[in-house]
Length: 112
Length: 161
Image (cartoon, rainbow over the protein chains, first blue to last red):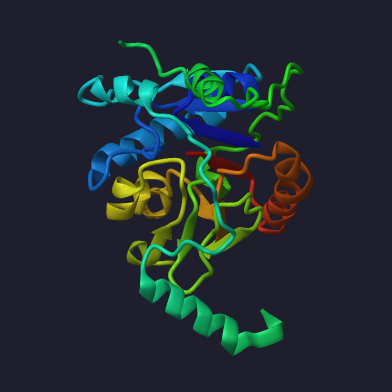
């Protein structure tokens, strides 16, 4: 019994999850804008209604929220995935994270 | 430009310019499996799976070379302990406020308000920039599904990036 959020309508239409709530925001904002808790709450409440209101398999509910401008769409159409070389080492957000994670791994040894 | 961005076209064009073969997007033509919700959301236990590469401080971060691992993040975690590791989206806002890709704090609030019954003990996260859909289907998805089922959730919210 699943509900998917989405900010990429064409990709969602191809994959066809059972129910979707689509938010037309730039990638990286699937559930809202930073530090706007009331907006985030409203987005979630309207999305979660999809659990009961979307009764045709593959339905997509378009959430009624707009990013303040459409400029980001021009950039989104131009940016590309350049498939640069990727490495299989963990990419920590901060150096502290790496130290903590490595300490945890060392501490539990073979029992991780 | 009021229409949603067409990501598939954009990526197809870019790959063509770079001389790559077109990316094989997952395309399902069958009707999706579908179950009706048998009780109100206010009585449901909710699970969540997010693909924005979220991890908690202390956990190993994701790598970017078809990482098919996932993390279990306790739903008691502090928002300030959440981190992101992903290459295919601008993480600036997710790092200012992880709720934009991992809405745990809002879901806790909705439980307090009685909108949602309860949350699973753990939410699950992975780094969605995995080029091999076969590895996702064969390795990652079944393990996450198993973990979700073990959490005994009634409903699951999927949050892609």
